[in-house]
Length: 126
Image (cartoon, rainbow, N blue to C red):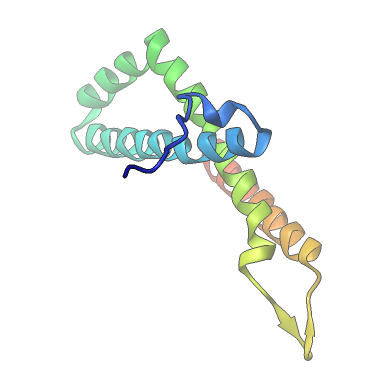
């Protein structure tokens, strides 16, 4: 006797928005890994001297590298926004015996992200 297994279409995740966001968020890990590898390559180029750094910049200027980095940035932003959306469910903060409203936890995460981004921008652009 065999059990019936309903066939599942390959694009099942396109049926609902929540499924699509889930799959895209999982896919974002590939692009986060790309950013890590790219950063390590940059560190290696900087430690190799000015000639190596110039070669890295030349390779980074190709249209396909720029395109990958733009796509990766969009996926990292998606990952961050969805993570901060999940934070109030994952973190229960209590102050003076009362639970901090979930919306306040999310706002605190976005505020910290904004402040840290401003600090990084200030360090890079000064």
